[in-house]
Length: 450
Image (tube, rainbow, N blue to C red; front, top):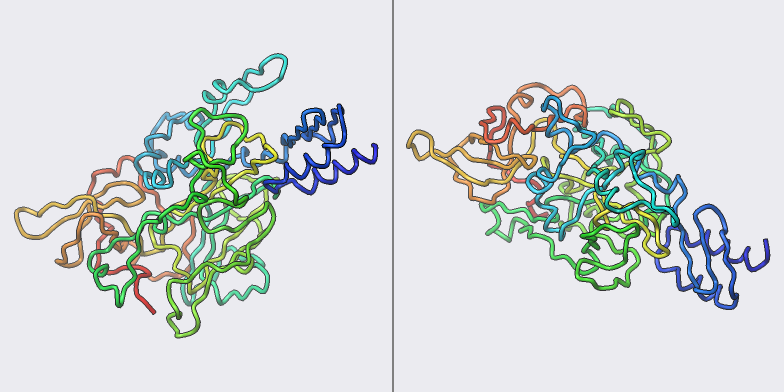
């Protein structure tokens, strides 16, 4: 290899996973004329046009290797369903409708019938319409574990740097491939995105936080492709070019392809409940990369590894019953082949996160019981509208997020932590029914000021 080729190869290697480095490489190759080089599998340089691309090798496409579809759980009771080709658009528009407030962000789309794809002759590319027919929405199930005082952890791991186990009460975990392909990986919290209304306390701003829906900045909005292309772009839904290379909505846990951010998330309180200084969640203190294998996960994920987001005891995450998702935003410059995804970032993994005896939902309707001034409420839990009774006579308003106690588990003494294996997902058959093991009670989560 010539000295010039070696120089370009070094820069190609250094820029992988880093957005915005295309201009640097263009300067390097500007003095070289009429040379076409393939530096290593997937890397291509044409000096006459100053073109560079980093088309992926197999290990770059780890996100297309899928496991345990979270979307399937709602439909799991449907006999004879072909979950290899299932249309989940109804679930996305109804149960996960809050994602529309993030300007139409979509889940990952995976290849369900790779052998049926048609290759165009000549250039050797996949026909987009063929991918559309084969691509299926997929959200990998997030494994989680929550443990209260006196309960030990069931699936232990070494933890992040300077890990103090007693400072944490649980974790969220999902499979991940090699770093560098995704410029940003971030955590999406439903109540952070949509706001958290509870009329009983929202007017008392002296003692309670009023949590409004997120006001998205341009750099928080995803780029969308209504007609999916082979490559992502670096523009948001307004068509504006974004200058911040690490743009992505949510709590960033990976930036620049490899880096655990060191900037703390702002705490809503000035103090914790024990009157110590408020803890600001920080990725380089709370993220374990890579963690131990998640035993008993529904499917084998090798050769992927695992990442854990540890939940600090003074964190205001999660609100029991909300959706927690993890977003992936691929590198966009130099272009990365991303196989016709529909939004950047996309939802790669997620789950409804509840505790052993608590969840929550949003009031959508109410009705009186046999003419008495006592209400039964329709509550959207896990995106499913079910009817629930209350423990008292308090009147809740439409749009309120209310706390629900799980009567069937609360009456039992907890002798172990609560994990994703214990989590029960509502099914399609539950919609519109009365759920007698849920009861609304007068409580709210993480709104008291300290």
